[in-house]
Length: 104
Image (tube, rainbow, N blue to C red; front, top):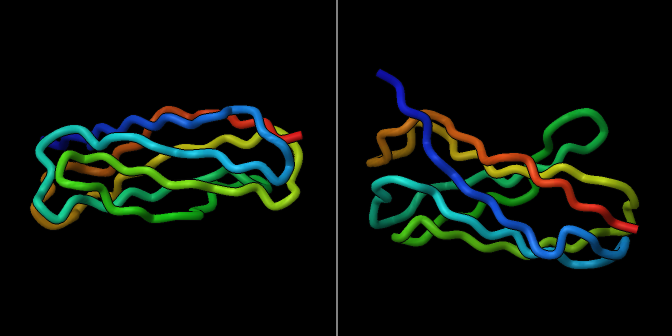
């Protein structure tokens, strides 16, 4: 049986300037090992999902990262992905819902 990792993603604010900063935070669900788990943060850019940060959660499964836009304008979809096969974390790959951020 295969069970996907549960991951929640929150982004504030979801509207910003072209050089504004957003904060991505969230939580991986389930039993988290003492050393945490790796989370890939992705943005959909030019037709593909591109990783831009890879934080490790704390023991409670929480993560938090700041991201600063570098002049891009438009709507950008973000998501968090928890890769499967991590030590002491018995879940398959899981992904959060997609959250759109607009920069003007």
